[in-house]
Length: 314
Image (tube, rainbow, N blue to C red; front, side, top):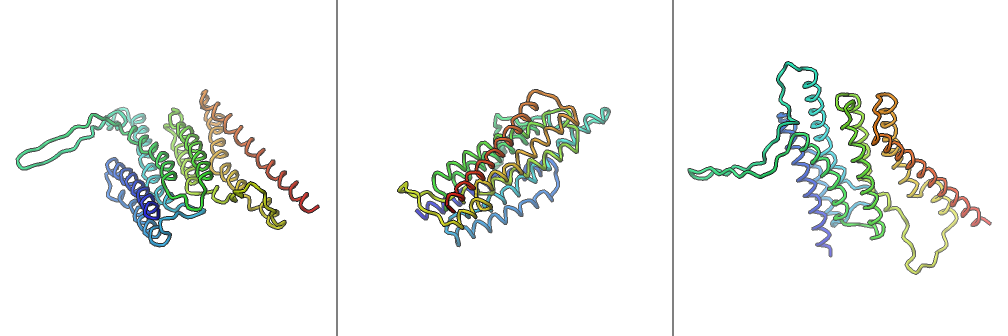
């Protein structure tokens, strides 16, 4: 069982490193500067974290924070930033410099090919797959979210129960869907050529990804397998009801890192930049409704805790 745990921990980190290398390689191919490879420093730290996890933790994951996910984000997210900003500058140059010949990387498809050199012979294997520069970027972004979900699923669950892990994965899927929807703001024409909006969207997108490095449901108390509720000391109830309730932490972090920033940006697009579209209105309404429901949930939790505390005192 321990060997299987170590195998899963090692496999996930190898997948993280592989995707990180692909993202950094793609950035190097687009920008063409050797400093692009400096981002592999995050992968070096991931190697150190892997050794610590395997040798010290025996393959078991950390309870509150997932450093492997954080380091994985540290390698891929900066590469996506540079690629996205490069695409933005290319679009702006194409629009502003009509008389200047600029290589439109978005319109040029790149063949995936492998060249094999032998003794006196050269073979070129063409893979029937063409990716534009923009599609390359989208594939890397989508695989980032997919790897975060699959990686959390494959990682050893540590102190998490199977029920908690399933809840966490469902939360990850919903969060990833919201992030993908938010990133679609780049398809709006007024966003495409606006440097300020591109920086804002990329910044909030990056902040929202930090949720994946937190294991909030790990703090949930395990229920008694017998089904009989056990008495909880009064002082523990007071602490849980006020500041130590993991569900409250999860709701607050979700609002602060995702729903509220997403709503602010969409309202900014509508009222400041006049980006009026059906999808923008729909997701603005959705974010507003989600925040209202989360606030309602906070009120319910605090009210229930206060009632339970009052009854226990009596």
